[in-house]
Length: 91
Image (spheres, rainbow, N blue to C red):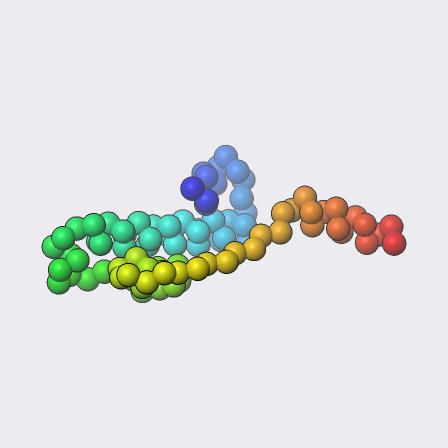
């Protein structure tokens, strides 16, 4: 899972370290929502923690209802970024 690596092994610091913290907290919140939804007692009248992260708020209708959700993400690889950055110096 994204963000689950250990800090000592990856030597993440600064912004990358903060990003891994945010990823882990979002995944934890998503796991808590799925756990609450799978428990019949909590689902019937209990609290489902949708507001604990942005990802669970976005997926609230899909996780707890009959809605269809389309999620589009985009990631630029660091390799492509480095190639593009080095090409700028040559032109």
